Image (tube, each protein chain N blue to C red):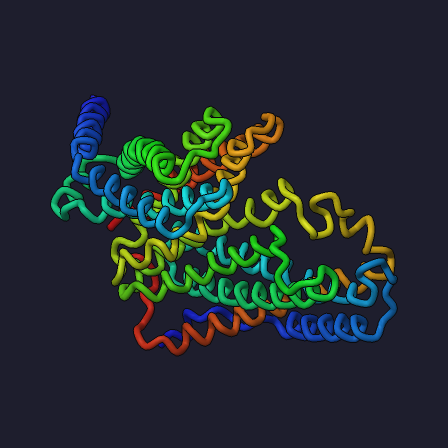
Amino acid sequence: MNASLAPKSLHPAIKWMAVLLLFYSFLMGWLGDVPRKVILNESVRNLYFHVPMWFGMLLMLLGSAVYSVRYLLFQQFTDDTQAHSLGLVGLLFGFLGLVTGMVWAQFTWGAWWSGDPKQNASAVGLLLYLAYMVLRSSFEDAQRRARMAAVYNVLAFFCLIPLLFILPRLTDSLHPGNGGNPGFSAYDLDGRMRWVFYPAVLGWTLTGWWLANLWARYRTLTSRAPLPLSKS
Amino acid sequence: MKQAAFLRRALALLGHDARRETRQAQALAGSLLYLVAGVFAAQLLLRPVGPAAWLTFYWLLVLFVSIYTVSRSFLGQSRGLHLYYRVSVPGVAWWLTKVMTGTLMLWVLMGFCAVLMALWMGYPIQDTGLFVLTIFLGAPMLVTVLTLVSAMSQGASQPAQLMPVLGFPLLVPGLLLVHRLSKLALDGLSWDLVWTYAGAMVGLNLMLLALGVLLFPFLWRD
């Protein structure tokens, strides 16, 4: 019944690219040469995992916010499903990014949790979107749920940006690029790392897009109630 | 011609609503009592209270009382009154009124909280002027976010539970900033850093107001 409303499956080329790029970044991440820097040593390889996951998360959450705005403007339930699925994938990547960051922190900063502003901000970011999921589960009526969730999503995204980018710069931070530490591009990213880093970012983004697409299609096809086509 | 009449009526209604809010001494009294009980409980937990702990208690109490105050102002409104406002007044105007009265109430509450804490826990703030500025900038931030979150929680199965869950993460950026500002007030240092943080607070408040103006009409449709 809902087959016609489900988002279309992604082009195979996108899926292949995602798989190949990720595979390439994993291979090079574990076996390739990396520059040895003080403190970081071999752990700089995490640059191919931790940072692309964060990029992926931000792009997924941006997509989620965009679809939420689309829902508010056009009231199409498919937009709401897409916003939901992108938010879920964003949460997943955010959680993975946080965990990889914690592992990295343990070996470079000395503790799993250093109270670093960016670390805290990332945790709050996850809380924001977990609250989004709680909000969604608190409403019975599909239309009201979609509308409230869309409004909260936009609010959350606009609170996330200062949280992740502006506040850590205002305070001291252990993260590179903040609080007196030299930034990534000046320090870590010599010619070699760039060749793996950017493909990794693209790979994670495409994978996230694929996951969200799968989830949105699954959700649309299995939802028992027929989704209204548009606001009557 | 019709617009002018509509506008006059809208303003009259808003004035009425604002007076109703401020006349509700019960609402403010409830929040004041909440603060008294909260401060008293806090000072029983820790003696003596160092400066850092003072600030921590202060912001936590303000956070809780603001959630309480705003949710009362929203959930306490009868259905009929709500429907009447809905057909008579543009949603944004109603929200802005709520924000203004809420901010006023919160200014009073935040000041009162500091006074109460001074009574029982001492007063470690060295730069009171800066502290007043912090209160001035912090209240609008709390109220804008909480009124939006309140409106969002209206139709939910458990509105009172949902509000803190939604509100806390959204308030964290703002709370971090006001905490930094109040820490500067506590230490009584020079005002160099103040402009950075105060500027960021003003920016945040403006962004939240703009978002509210854009988003509230969607929440109003209930």
